[in-house]
Image 1 (cartoon, rainbow, N blue to C red):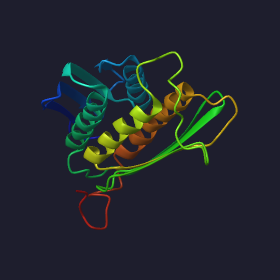
Image 2: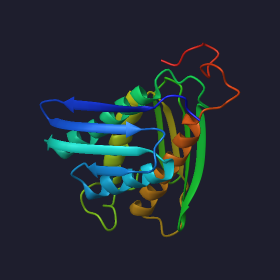
Image 3: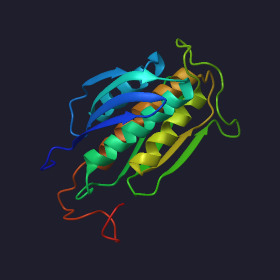
Image 4: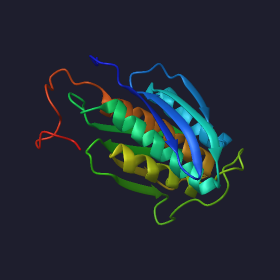
Length: 206
């Protein structure tokens, strides 16, 4: 169990967005999220529920969909990194394989200080482009933009792979990915009692 409260508040204001993000690693799955997009709200609620994180996002102003989605990812990444602190004692690595009907999302994370995103949906098929079923405000590509902003500021390596399957649709793919990402990051941020310092032979994670 962590010996200090791992939480952070980030206020991000640019010419395009004005938002506040509050994030707690050692939470109770509490979320109050208003990104302006129902589909992103839902995916982040799933991320928090399955990762046992607390998250509040208040979007006061946003101009253009691309900017809002990317900046929410950036602000959440900043909040995650700030809440994590020096990363002392964490397990660092996490992995989850989560099914959603016919879809299985495999997500691996490394809190390494080296941002890198692998986003592979369907072998040889590239990204799924249809609008998310049940929602109509974001496409799968928009979620990749969100993840790019998140990992670049959280400074983590995130590997997402979803093999091709029958009856594959974007809604199920994204639900499985965000659930798996929550579970994997929960694992990676847990305190390993046998680890006395930072989990890197370099002695630091930048």
